[in-house]
Structure formats: structure tokens, C-alpha cells
Image (tube, rainbow, N blue to C red):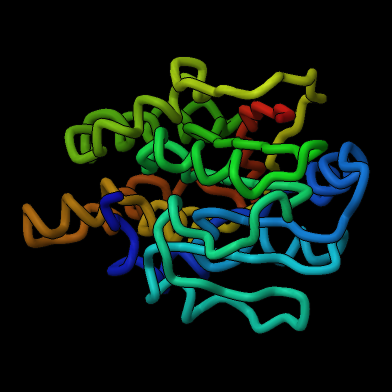
Length: 243
């Protein structure tokens, strides 16, 4: 796994949107037991914190110690700096595995082998991602999409393509179950949107290559258009399966 986010950990923790609580309530309701969950690729612990509302204990693992250092302390959560193939969990011990916005970075063969090892026979695995947000203001949307595709577009890692197609082309060797539709929705100030853009791996790679931050120019282009609060919406692509 490549680590694209350690240098952006502070921006990531401060600016990434949070998943809807309904998503985790639904996942927990599909599990016969709610003893142990594993949030693999936890980043700064967003999904882990939500899972702790429903499960007795949560393992939250990530390869970035810088990200884990910014995760909130929680009595039910144990954080582990490790790749996706080495959870240190016991065989047949996990009720739910969640991978939120991270599966495209994994070595899938080794991760799926580990997932099958640790899942209970009745266990559930859920992998999800959200791609480019949609902004209802036409002029803002045009400027934002131009920035995404044409300013930093060349700096997205190749794995980003899997996010854009909702993980549809990635293997998923589990028995699929139908899922409801979930969306991630926020009302943001311009500063909050710019913080989110600052957390992108493509933005970080652009800065490393060009030596300056393109987000400042985006902010100037949007300043006269952005209302005090603007709705920003992401569709969540979700694949859920059983052993």
C-alpha cells in the first residue's frame, strides 16, 4: 500500500466529511452479533467512532501513524498501525469489517484472505467510497469540476479511477446483499470546502511537484459566488457481502 495521506493528516482530520449515522445503524442491523468490528484503513478514525456506537469493541487499523495520531481516544476502539493484511485479530472473531474510502489502496488478494480468516461464518463485510461531490450552484460546480479535472486532475493516483466508478470493477469475493442508497451531505462555508480540497492526495502531489498551493486560486475564483453556506453532496457507493 502506498501512503498518500501522512503529510496531509491534519487537513484530512479537520476537513473530511463524516458518513451518515444511518449507514452504520443499517450495517449493525445486518449482523447477527455486534461484538467485534474492524475498520480497515481507518484514517483518523471516522468510521471507527461511528461503529463504536453499535459494537462492543472496534479495531481501527491504518498504515499511517500520522493519521492514527489524530484519531479520537475511545474506550471501545483499539488503534493499530498495520497494513490491511495483518489485523492481529483472531480467526473467526469479527462480526463486521468496514473499509471506508480505502479499498482502492489495498493489495486485494492479501486483504481478502485476511478478511475471510477473521470473519465469523455469519460475518459481514462492507466496502464503500464517495467520488466527486455535486454542488447545486451551476457556476460553482463548473469552477469546482474544472479544478478537479484540469488543475489537479493529472495528479490523482491511478487508483482514484476505482472511486470514480464506485468500486464496480474491483473484485468482491463475497455473497452480495442488496443495500439501501446512502448519501453524504454537508452545508459548508467556502473555508470548509477549501479545507476538504486541501486534503486530497492530488492536491498534495501537485504542491510537491509545482511548489505552490493551487487551492488559493480556487478560493479566489469562488469567493464572490459562494453563499454563507452551500450544500455539498456525495453519493456513497456501497458493496456489502457475507462469507
